[in-house]
Image (cartoon, rainbow, N blue to C red; front, side, top):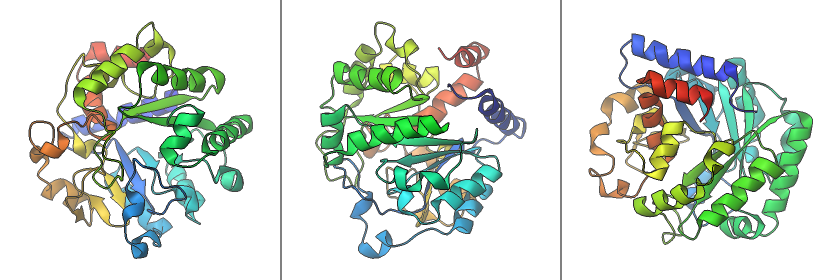
Length: 334
């Protein structure tokens, strides 16, 4: 099942309203991190590097809801850490769904069987399961054996219960076009997940492994080859066509870091969840006091190799909205 007509219409009308109001900065999606604790220690993630005192903290339901309400974003990606560790995560998701926010709950799947009964299928809810390759590759990425099989079993059970299931796959410089094709073929054809999100690994400052991030040239070559032979049009990818063009190097954009802001236990993170340039207490403070022009490739050396969705998917969406041809192309899903 692709993105529903309901979601397309809701998000499209939201973007149109921002244009009518002449707002130059607004969130397309908020990355909500209600905790940093995790039950895995993945080499490419640095969330569990926070001090023990912070790792023990949990965001309240009201704090989470208030932050999303203040931002006005139509979509929310609940991440972490591992969100299912949070004892009230089902309440956070439920309150956002009541407000007709489209919620993606990101998870490594290890706790899904234990927590699945706390959730109900909804057009406003989707599981977003991390799958970073086929069995051996995925388990190596998350530094624990058996996780791939746990995730696959959980996905099958979710599909059986009628949930919408998406996946999130990060690719590193150890990947080849064939490893990309293998895992996306499996997710698309064998598991039949509803949609797949893909991302090149980016230079995340706190990550223990700093050797396997992709550069811009490597990213473009990897996806250009993987997308060949009609694969790109056959796979149910949860991205705008222009963002996929961007990954292939067919077009380029400036970073739109304000389009997918991150809210965590520490506040609104500047300028995105990949960098640590301080926090704002409110969404308004984040937008008004961050020097957005200081970031992006060619401006900040930390951004030199970044092609992450949090900065460039909003750029692609805005470019799509500014072109009737590209809008029609996006609606066709090609």
